[in-house]
Image (tube, rainbow, N blue to C red; front, top):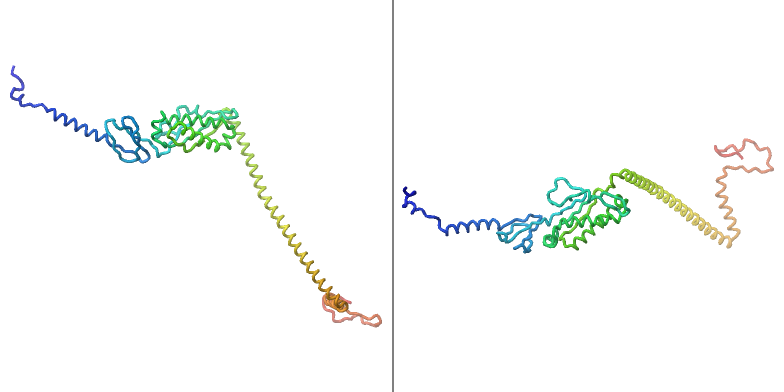
Length: 328
Protein backbone atom coordinates (compact mmCIF):
# COMPACT_ATOMS: atom_id res chain seq x y z
CA UNK A 1 0.00 0.00 0.00
CA UNK A 2 1.28 3.46 -0.88
CA UNK A 3 2.14 5.81 1.96
CA UNK A 4 -0.40 8.56 2.77
CA UNK A 5 0.26 11.35 2.52
CA UNK A 6 3.01 11.05 -0.04
CA UNK A 7 6.57 11.29 1.17
CA UNK A 8 7.28 14.61 -0.50
CA UNK A 9 4.21 16.19 1.17
CA UNK A 10 5.20 14.78 4.61
CA UNK A 11 8.58 16.38 4.32
CA UNK A 12 6.98 19.78 3.83
CA UNK A 13 4.89 19.47 7.09
CA UNK A 14 6.89 21.14 9.92
CA UNK A 15 5.99 20.98 13.62
CA UNK A 16 6.02 24.25 15.69
CA UNK A 17 9.37 24.95 17.14
CA UNK A 18 10.08 24.82 20.90
CA UNK A 19 10.86 28.55 20.91
CA UNK A 20 7.42 29.48 19.67
CA UNK A 21 5.77 27.28 22.30
CA UNK A 22 7.85 28.86 25.05
CA UNK A 23 6.96 32.34 23.80
CA UNK A 24 3.25 31.53 23.80
CA UNK A 25 3.49 30.07 27.31
CA UNK A 26 5.38 33.11 28.61
CA UNK A 27 2.83 35.43 27.00
CA UNK A 28 -0.02 33.60 28.71
CA UNK A 29 1.81 33.83 32.04
CA UNK A 30 2.33 37.56 31.56
CA UNK A 31 -1.34 38.12 30.80
CA UNK A 32 -2.44 36.08 33.80
CA UNK A 33 0.18 37.80 35.98
CA UNK A 34 -1.01 41.24 34.93
CA UNK A 35 -4.60 40.19 35.58
CA UNK A 36 -3.67 39.02 39.08
CA UNK A 37 -1.41 42.00 39.90
CA UNK A 38 -4.02 44.64 40.77
CA UNK A 39 -6.88 44.82 43.24
CA UNK A 40 -9.29 47.42 44.59
CA UNK A 41 -10.11 48.28 48.21
CA UNK A 42 -13.54 49.79 48.86
CA UNK A 43 -14.08 53.23 50.46
CA UNK A 44 -15.11 51.79 53.85
CA UNK A 45 -12.37 49.17 54.04
CA UNK A 46 -8.65 48.55 54.36
CA UNK A 47 -6.57 45.80 52.78
CA UNK A 48 -4.08 43.63 54.64
CA UNK A 49 -1.32 42.36 52.34
CA UNK A 50 0.50 39.12 53.19
CA UNK A 51 3.65 38.05 51.36
CA UNK A 52 4.25 34.32 51.51
CA UNK A 53 1.68 34.21 54.32
CA UNK A 54 3.47 36.80 56.48
CA UNK A 55 2.09 40.25 57.22
CA UNK A 56 3.53 42.78 54.77
CA UNK A 57 1.48 46.02 54.94
CA UNK A 58 -1.94 47.61 55.35
CA UNK A 59 -3.29 49.67 52.44
CA UNK A 60 -6.02 52.28 52.27
CA UNK A 61 -8.99 52.42 49.87
CA UNK A 62 -8.19 52.67 46.16
CA UNK A 63 -6.47 50.77 43.35
CA UNK A 64 -3.30 48.86 44.35
CA UNK A 65 -0.86 46.37 42.87
CA UNK A 66 0.65 43.16 44.28
CA UNK A 67 2.85 40.29 43.29
CA UNK A 68 0.85 37.62 41.43
CA UNK A 69 0.67 33.83 41.57
CA UNK A 70 -0.01 33.65 45.33
CA UNK A 71 3.11 35.51 46.37
CA UNK A 72 0.99 38.35 47.79
CA UNK A 73 -2.49 37.76 49.15
CA UNK A 74 -4.90 40.50 50.21
CA UNK A 75 -7.65 40.37 52.83
CA UNK A 76 -10.10 43.30 52.72
CA UNK A 77 -11.66 44.26 56.06
CA UNK A 78 -14.50 46.80 56.61
CA UNK A 79 -12.51 48.91 59.09
CA UNK A 80 -14.46 52.13 58.49
CA UNK A 81 -17.92 50.66 58.84
CA UNK A 82 -19.75 50.01 62.09
CA UNK A 83 -20.62 46.36 62.59
CA UNK A 84 -22.99 44.87 65.09
CA UNK A 85 -23.73 41.67 66.94
CA UNK A 86 -27.26 40.70 67.95
CA UNK A 87 -27.93 38.56 71.00
CA UNK A 88 -31.23 36.83 71.68
CA UNK A 89 -32.75 37.77 68.32
CA UNK A 90 -31.79 38.31 64.68
CA UNK A 91 -32.72 40.86 62.06
CA UNK A 92 -34.20 39.18 58.97
CA UNK A 93 -32.15 39.43 55.80
CA UNK A 94 -28.81 40.52 57.27
CA UNK A 95 -25.88 39.88 54.90
CA UNK A 96 -23.04 42.26 55.80
CA UNK A 97 -21.76 40.34 58.82
CA UNK A 98 -22.07 36.53 58.88
CA UNK A 99 -21.68 36.40 62.68
CA UNK A 100 -24.22 39.16 63.37
CA UNK A 101 -26.72 36.70 64.87
CA UNK A 102 -25.98 33.75 67.13
CA UNK A 103 -26.79 30.13 66.50
CA UNK A 104 -28.92 29.69 69.65
CA UNK A 105 -30.68 33.00 70.43
CA UNK A 106 -33.02 31.46 73.02
CA UNK A 107 -30.10 30.33 75.17
CA UNK A 108 -28.28 33.66 74.73
CA UNK A 109 -31.12 35.73 76.15
CA UNK A 110 -31.89 33.46 79.12
CA UNK A 111 -30.20 34.97 82.20
CA UNK A 112 -30.41 34.93 85.99
CA UNK A 113 -30.39 38.21 87.91
CA UNK A 114 -28.71 38.98 91.20
CA UNK A 115 -31.91 38.28 93.18
CA UNK A 116 -32.18 34.82 91.54
CA UNK A 117 -34.95 35.73 89.10
CA UNK A 118 -35.02 34.65 85.48
CA UNK A 119 -35.11 37.22 82.70
CA UNK A 120 -35.04 37.24 78.90
CA UNK A 121 -32.51 39.87 77.78
CA UNK A 122 -31.94 40.92 74.17
CA UNK A 123 -29.11 43.33 73.36
CA UNK A 124 -26.96 44.68 70.54
CA UNK A 125 -23.19 45.30 70.47
CA UNK A 126 -21.87 47.81 67.92
CA UNK A 127 -18.15 47.68 67.14
CA UNK A 128 -15.45 48.57 64.60
CA UNK A 129 -12.27 46.83 63.44
CA UNK A 130 -9.64 49.18 64.84
CA UNK A 131 -6.39 47.29 64.11
CA UNK A 132 -6.56 45.00 61.03
CA UNK A 133 -3.23 43.36 61.83
CA UNK A 134 -4.31 42.34 65.34
CA UNK A 135 -7.71 41.30 64.03
CA UNK A 136 -6.17 38.85 61.52
CA UNK A 137 -3.06 37.54 63.27
CA UNK A 138 -3.31 37.83 67.08
CA UNK A 139 -6.56 35.91 67.74
CA UNK A 140 -8.19 33.06 65.89
CA UNK A 141 -11.83 33.88 64.95
CA UNK A 142 -11.91 37.35 66.56
CA UNK A 143 -15.56 37.93 65.69
CA UNK A 144 -16.72 34.77 67.46
CA UNK A 145 -14.40 35.58 70.35
CA UNK A 146 -16.09 38.98 70.64
CA UNK A 147 -19.48 37.27 70.74
CA UNK A 148 -18.36 34.98 73.54
CA UNK A 149 -16.80 37.69 75.68
CA UNK A 150 -19.78 40.02 75.09
CA UNK A 151 -22.17 37.36 76.31
CA UNK A 152 -19.96 36.63 79.33
CA UNK A 153 -19.69 40.33 80.21
CA UNK A 154 -23.44 40.89 79.93
CA UNK A 155 -24.22 37.86 82.08
CA UNK A 156 -21.78 39.17 84.69
CA UNK A 157 -23.37 42.64 84.72
CA UNK A 158 -26.95 41.32 84.79
CA UNK A 159 -26.01 38.93 87.58
CA UNK A 160 -25.14 41.94 89.79
CA UNK A 161 -28.57 43.59 89.32
CA UNK A 162 -32.06 42.88 90.56
CA UNK A 163 -34.82 42.08 88.14
CA UNK A 164 -36.54 45.41 88.91
CA UNK A 165 -33.38 47.33 87.98
CA UNK A 166 -33.03 45.29 84.82
CA UNK A 167 -36.60 45.92 83.66
CA UNK A 168 -37.15 49.49 84.88
CA UNK A 169 -34.59 51.99 86.22
CA UNK A 170 -31.24 50.24 85.77
CA UNK A 171 -31.09 49.77 81.99
CA UNK A 172 -28.75 52.68 81.31
CA UNK A 173 -26.35 51.69 84.09
CA UNK A 174 -26.25 48.14 82.74
CA UNK A 175 -25.44 49.41 79.24
CA UNK A 176 -22.63 51.63 80.51
CA UNK A 177 -21.09 48.96 82.72
CA UNK A 178 -21.41 46.29 80.01
CA UNK A 179 -19.70 48.57 77.49
CA UNK A 180 -16.80 49.26 79.85
CA UNK A 181 -16.40 45.54 80.57
CA UNK A 182 -16.39 44.58 76.87
CA UNK A 183 -13.86 47.28 76.00
CA UNK A 184 -11.59 46.03 78.76
CA UNK A 185 -11.78 42.42 77.57
CA UNK A 186 -11.22 43.41 73.92
CA UNK A 187 -7.99 45.20 74.82
CA UNK A 188 -6.87 42.37 77.08
CA UNK A 189 -7.23 39.75 74.33
CA UNK A 190 -5.80 42.02 71.55
CA UNK A 191 -8.78 41.53 69.29
CA UNK A 192 -8.06 44.68 67.27
CA UNK A 193 -11.71 45.66 67.86
CA UNK A 194 -13.20 48.76 69.46
CA UNK A 195 -16.63 48.32 71.05
CA UNK A 196 -18.62 51.53 70.52
CA UNK A 197 -22.01 50.88 72.08
CA UNK A 198 -24.07 48.36 74.01
CA UNK A 199 -27.83 48.74 73.75
CA UNK A 200 -30.47 46.75 75.57
CA UNK A 201 -33.46 45.92 73.39
CA UNK A 202 -36.24 43.84 74.90
CA UNK A 203 -36.01 42.81 78.55
CA UNK A 204 -38.86 40.61 79.67
CA UNK A 205 -39.54 38.06 82.38
CA UNK A 206 -40.25 34.47 81.35
CA UNK A 207 -43.67 33.76 79.92
CA UNK A 208 -44.77 31.92 83.07
CA UNK A 209 -44.55 35.07 85.21
CA UNK A 210 -45.25 37.69 82.56
CA UNK A 211 -48.70 38.55 83.95
CA UNK A 212 -47.38 39.11 87.48
CA UNK A 213 -44.62 41.38 86.23
CA UNK A 214 -47.13 43.37 84.19
CA UNK A 215 -49.19 43.97 87.31
CA UNK A 216 -46.09 45.09 89.23
CA UNK A 217 -45.12 47.45 86.43
CA UNK A 218 -48.64 48.88 86.33
CA UNK A 219 -48.54 49.47 90.09
CA UNK A 220 -45.20 51.22 89.80
CA UNK A 221 -46.50 53.39 86.97
CA UNK A 222 -49.59 54.30 89.02
CA UNK A 223 -47.36 55.22 91.94
CA UNK A 224 -45.18 57.41 89.75
CA UNK A 225 -48.29 59.03 88.28
CA UNK A 226 -49.66 59.80 91.76
CA UNK A 227 -46.30 61.23 92.83
CA UNK A 228 -46.19 63.44 89.74
CA UNK A 229 -49.73 64.70 90.38
CA UNK A 230 -48.88 65.46 94.02
CA UNK A 231 -45.71 67.27 92.98
CA UNK A 232 -47.74 69.29 90.51
CA UNK A 233 -50.22 70.34 93.18
CA UNK A 234 -47.36 71.15 95.52
CA UNK A 235 -45.64 73.27 92.89
CA UNK A 236 -48.92 75.09 92.24
CA UNK A 237 -50.05 75.75 95.83
CA UNK A 238 -46.78 76.37 97.65
CA UNK A 239 -45.49 79.17 95.37
CA UNK A 240 -48.93 80.84 95.55
CA UNK A 241 -48.91 80.69 99.34
CA UNK A 242 -45.36 82.02 99.44
CA UNK A 243 -46.36 84.89 97.17
CA UNK A 244 -49.35 85.79 99.35
CA UNK A 245 -47.17 85.61 102.46
CA UNK A 246 -44.57 87.89 100.87
CA UNK A 247 -47.31 90.31 99.84
CA UNK A 248 -48.73 90.42 103.39
CA UNK A 249 -45.27 90.92 104.88
CA UNK A 250 -44.50 93.75 102.45
CA UNK A 251 -47.85 95.43 103.22
CA UNK A 252 -47.17 95.16 106.94
CA UNK A 253 -43.70 96.59 106.50
CA UNK A 254 -45.11 99.48 104.47
CA UNK A 255 -47.73 100.20 107.14
CA UNK A 256 -45.02 100.06 109.80
CA UNK A 257 -42.85 102.55 107.91
CA UNK A 258 -45.88 104.82 107.44
CA UNK A 259 -46.85 104.81 111.12
CA UNK A 260 -43.26 105.31 112.23
CA UNK A 261 -42.81 108.25 109.86
CA UNK A 262 -46.11 109.80 110.94
CA UNK A 263 -45.17 109.43 114.61
CA UNK A 264 -41.76 110.91 114.01
CA UNK A 265 -43.40 113.83 112.17
CA UNK A 266 -45.88 114.39 115.03
CA UNK A 267 -43.03 114.30 117.52
CA UNK A 268 -41.08 116.83 115.48
CA UNK A 269 -44.12 119.12 115.20
CA UNK A 270 -44.88 118.83 118.92
CA UNK A 271 -41.25 119.55 119.76
CA UNK A 272 -41.32 122.69 117.60
CA UNK A 273 -44.55 123.92 119.27
CA UNK A 274 -43.14 123.10 122.69
CA UNK A 275 -40.09 125.22 122.04
CA UNK A 276 -42.30 128.14 121.06
CA UNK A 277 -44.56 127.56 124.07
CA UNK A 278 -41.58 127.65 126.41
CA UNK A 279 -40.49 130.96 124.92
CA UNK A 280 -43.98 132.63 124.98
CA UNK A 281 -46.64 130.54 126.72
CA UNK A 282 -49.58 132.97 126.47
CA UNK A 283 -49.03 133.85 122.85
CA UNK A 284 -48.54 130.25 121.88
CA UNK A 285 -51.67 129.16 123.79
CA UNK A 286 -53.76 131.85 122.12
CA UNK A 287 -52.38 130.91 118.70
CA UNK A 288 -53.13 127.26 119.21
CA UNK A 289 -56.65 128.08 120.34
CA UNK A 290 -57.33 130.28 117.33
CA UNK A 291 -55.87 127.75 114.87
CA UNK A 292 -57.92 124.99 116.41
CA UNK A 293 -61.15 126.99 116.32
CA UNK A 294 -60.46 128.00 112.70
CA UNK A 295 -60.35 124.33 111.80
CA UNK A 296 -63.38 123.26 113.87
CA UNK A 297 -65.93 126.05 113.43
CA UNK A 298 -66.26 125.78 109.63
CA UNK A 299 -67.35 122.18 110.13
CA UNK A 300 -70.17 122.98 112.62
CA UNK A 301 -72.41 124.89 110.20
CA UNK A 302 -74.39 128.07 110.90
CA UNK A 303 -75.12 128.75 114.58
CA UNK A 304 -77.27 131.43 116.29
CA UNK A 305 -76.26 132.38 119.77
CA UNK A 306 -79.08 133.91 121.87
CA UNK A 307 -78.62 135.75 125.06
CA UNK A 308 -80.55 134.28 127.99
CA UNK A 309 -82.02 137.67 128.85
CA UNK A 310 -83.52 138.13 125.40
CA UNK A 311 -87.32 137.78 125.29
CA UNK A 312 -90.01 137.58 122.65
CA UNK A 313 -87.77 136.03 120.00
CA UNK A 314 -89.66 135.08 116.92
CA UNK A 315 -89.57 131.25 116.41
CA UNK A 316 -89.13 131.66 112.67
CA UNK A 317 -85.65 133.04 113.11
CA UNK A 318 -83.27 132.56 111.39
CA UNK A 319 -84.83 133.11 108.02
CA UNK A 320 -81.66 132.59 105.96
CA UNK A 321 -81.01 128.93 106.74
CA UNK A 322 -79.51 127.18 103.72
CA UNK A 323 -80.65 123.73 102.62
CA UNK A 324 -78.85 121.03 104.51
CA UNK A 325 -78.00 123.22 107.51
CA UNK A 326 -79.50 122.45 110.86
CA UNK A 327 -81.68 124.65 112.96
CA UNK A 328 -80.30 126.31 116.17
